[in-house]
Every structure is written in C-alpha cells, then in structure tokens.
Amino acid sequence: LFLRDVEHRLQGIADKQTQRLPDDELGWQRLTFAMGFSARAAFERKLRRYRESVRHHFSQVIADPEQETDAAQGADQELLDLWLGELDEAQAAAQLEAIGVQEGDKVYAHLNDFRESRSVQNMQAIGRERLDRLMPLLLEALGYQGHGETTVVRLLAFVEAVLRRSAYIALLVENPSALTQLVKLSGASPWIAERLTLHPVLLDELLDVRTLYSPPERAELDDELRQQLLRVAEDDLEQQMEVLRNFKQAHLLRVAASEVTEVLPLMKVSDYLTWLAESILNQVVMLAWEPLVERHGRPSRLDGQPCNPDFVVAGYGKLGGIELGHNSDLDLVFLHDAASGGMTDGDKPVSNEQFYARLGQRIIHILSTRTMSGQLYEVDMRLRPSGSAGLLVSSMDSFEKYQLNDAWTWEHQALVRARVVAGCNRARARFDAIRHQVLCLERPLEKLREDVLAMRDKMVDHLGEKGEDRFHLKQDPGGIVDIEFMVQYGVLRWASSHGELTRFTDNVRLLETLAALDIMSAQDAGLLREAYLAYRSAAHRASLRKEKSIVDDTQFRDLREGVRAIWKHWFDLQG
Image (cartoon, rainbow, N blue to C red; front, side, top):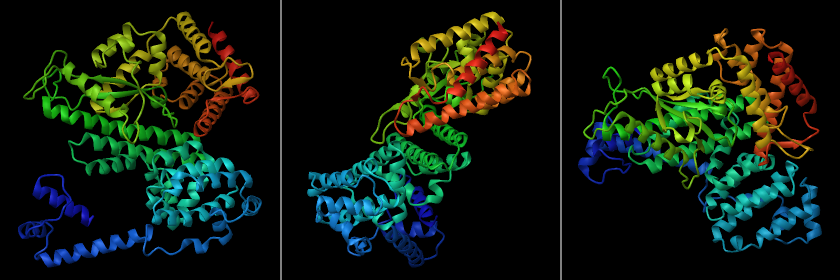
C-alpha cells in the first residue's frame, strides 16, 4: 500500500503514467511533501525499509543464483544419476518403478530424448544447473503420485517451454508445493497442462493452494480485475487487453484445478465460469465506452438526457443459462435505449445509432482479437434480431417489435435462456420487461408443438452422432438438447398463465419451477435434472481431457431411455 501511494503521488505530480523516483532535489521535496513527511531523509528511510522487506520475501520465493542451496542434495542421488544418464536403461526403469512411476521404461525413454535434445544441450550454465536440480524433484513427485508416460510427456513439454526462462524452473525448485500441484494437475488434465505450457506465468497460481482451490465471490472477481486494470494507462488498449486475458487464464486454471480434483461440484464450476465472463464483459463495456464518449460525447435519451450508458449485453445460451463450460463461446446480443435519430453531445457528434454501432464493434474487437496471450472469447452474434443480416446493435424499441411480430418460435426458445450480463440497470429493467412480455404471449398450441418438434428433428439430422455405437451427450435423442427443448416448450406453453416461469434462465431451476406448479411431475423433473447434470458433468470432464462430448453407447443408457420416455409423454400429452 505504501508503494502504491508513492506511485499515485508520482503520477499525480508528473500527470503521466510513471513509476520512476525523482532524479532532482525539487522532485524529491514535492514527493516527500505529498507523502506527508516533513523531511526527505525520513521519507527515504521508510521507503528503503519497505523495499528491503519486499526484497527479502522475494528472495524466499526465487533465490539469487549465487545464494541458491544445492536442492539436488535433498533428492535421491540415484535420481540425479538417472536424469544425467549415468544408469543403464534397465537400472533406470527399475529405479523409476521402485519410487512409484508407472511405465518406467517408456518414461526413461522420454527423459533420455529430452536430455539429449538440442534445447537442453544449448542451455546456459545457470539454466542447466537449475534444470539438473529440478528433474530429480520432478521424478520424485511423479512417483509419489503414481503417474507414468502420459503425464511425463505433458510435463516435459512444459519444462521445454520454460528452458529459456529458468526463473520458472527456480520457482519450482524452491516451492515443492507448486511442483506437486504441477504434476498433479498435468496428470489430471491435458487441458490444464496445455494452458500452463502456453502461459507459464500461471505457475504463480500454483504457489498457494488456498487460493488455487478457493473460488472468489463475484464481487471479489470484479474488484480484482478493476484493480489490475487501474495499473494500466487509460489509453493503452493493448496492455488492457493483455490484463484481461491474463486475468481470465489465471481463473480458468483455478476453476479447472478445482473441478478435476473434485473440490467444486458442477453447478459451482459453471457459476464461477459464468461470473468470470460477466466480470470481464462489464469491464470491456466500460473500456469500449469511455474513449468513444471522450471523442463524440454521450448519446441522448428520448427525454434529452445523456445516456449513461443505456446499453446492455444480453447473454444467451450457456452464458444466459449460467452454464458456461471451459471452452464455451459467448452468445451475445447488444441493445441500446437511446432516442432514435438523436445525436451525441460532443465536439464531433455522430448519430446515436452510429455511436452504438462503433461501441459494439469495439467490444467485439477487445473480446475476439488474438494477442500474445490468446483470445478472450469467441463471440457469436447470430441470435440478434434478423440474425447475421441485422444490425450489430439494436434499439430496445426495434428489439421489442421484432420479438412481438417477426421472431420465429426458435428465437423465443432462445429468449427463455437470455438475461442481461453487462450494462446499466435502467436498460436491464427494460430488457427484462420485454422478455417477460414476449415469453408470456398466448401461443397457438399446436403450432408451438409442431415448431419445437420440427426444430429438434432438424438439429438431430444435422448435429447428432451418426455412429450407432456412440452417444453425443448434447445433440442425440435423450441428451442435453432434449431436456432443454422440453423446458423451453414448457415456458412458452404455460408462461401466459404462470408468469413466474420467466424468472429464471437456467434449466435446473426452471425444471424445479415446472414441478412446483404441477405442470410436470416431480418424478419426471427429478429424472431430467439428474440426467442434465450427469451429461453436463461428463461433457466438462471430456473438455478437460480435450475430447469431444461423445461417449460409448452403453453409457447413461437408463438416463437416456428415461429422458426419451418423458419426451414422448410430454409432447404426446400436448398433441
């Protein structure tokens, strides 16, 4: 906090982004006064004390190369000899298996290839010394956890990625807990191993298991991201985008670690991933909004008042249903509530419509541009009014007219899972009112039934798994989409007489509501809930293994048959 205060005073005095201490007496006097000290010497003493304290703690994490102890002394000398290639193949395999490593011969072959690789042979002396300290410790951790060839391949890919940045190797040598987590998580999930290899900075997340396996609350996510962005100049969009991506990667690692170790149940995992996306989206909206306002001024409302921002991002699909997965894209719709035909109030005015179109483009740019740290999210805007042919950002008035007069039944099905995930409360209330009104419309029952069944048949034909011995968890009959369609049909069929069906957007609570209203039997709702969570949990695990959401036909057979029986009863009853 003291160093942050010094930084703020420096930036206030210089009126620019800087962290450099003064190089002249007047600058020191100004900083001393701004920090509340009467004399420069007293201020410098306190500053020096804090810096020495920070340096001490830093040295406990990553020791100076000249002061490092020989960590290899603590490791079994035979493991060091094994790594250095001083044992024959049979001895090495036997030694590995003796400490618990599976498939010792295959593991040793990979170690041999890695040690003789050009990347290792060309290392600088200090880096090679650190690597020689690390490898026996890594093998020890590998054996302790009973891993084998698959895990060692992932670990060696990671080590190779950090050979030129040996501070990461030193971090693992000096932090056995972090090394343990690296081995454990790499063995549990190729997805996690790949993330760590691509972004070694994420090793920091492994240092403290208390934060690694303890997801923050939504407000904590918001505050953490806001504080990280405060350290970046307001006009440095490139660095802001890097902060957003690093923030996302760190929390993706935390939630994946919590899931593969079964610290968090599925519903909590989805909550965490959804909150993470919402925190990012809210910051992205502000990062896109403020430069446009500075350039063009604010758009105007119908009553002439300036907008603030009178704009929302509506999340559909998994985001709207609070069911995001690890690799989910974002189904988004952008809406504004400014006056039609109005102008912004700045020195370079543009129409309200042009302002919000630029806002939408800027948001998509921040979310989807690939930087050195990757992409924030894939964005799908096809659910906006008129789809790809429609405006990128629609007014609330045109959105309401479209939903009431022109939308297809499948678009109203999508609206069941839609909710505002970023933007202002004023526009949020307007969206919620429109959604409630649309979902509560009286619908011709036979046409509703026919439309829903026709769309489902179309999806099975185009997206279902064609092999008879395979089951697509999402698309095949008896799978996730069957359950979603039954819920959506239930809302569109009965919301006109039971308005409370528009309250929730997630399938689990909607199933509970349908049962509470006696529209669906408690037994049927319970089975659908069980199947839905089982399918989603299996899909999450497949994602972390970098596999498709397709399983053997023998899996979930009872649940699938139960879902199909309820499907037939549900729609035959309405026919």
